[in-house]
Image (tube, rainbow, N blue to C red; front, side, top):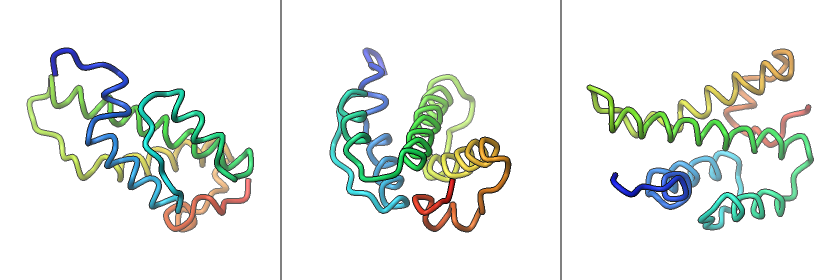
Length: 121
């Protein structure tokens, strides 16, 4: 991982791209390739979602970036091999916890799993 940049880690590597595909499928969104934070912001701002739901999706991506960073650190510094297939599950769970606490626990887990874009905030 010598010479790895944050741009590569968060936008170009296969692990990140696979994770974003899963998030897009979960949110029923068309995903374009973005190669930088600026590209991602342009994509996010182009989405036809309410301000509140867009804010929730933004939070999901922040959780995804945290999960990618954590995964990378375990790969480099950990004594056990992390499980790639669990990253998306962690993003769903941690982002639910974040959104739920911001909304005083009024978010339904089943709605979160099936169609988070339909939440009433």
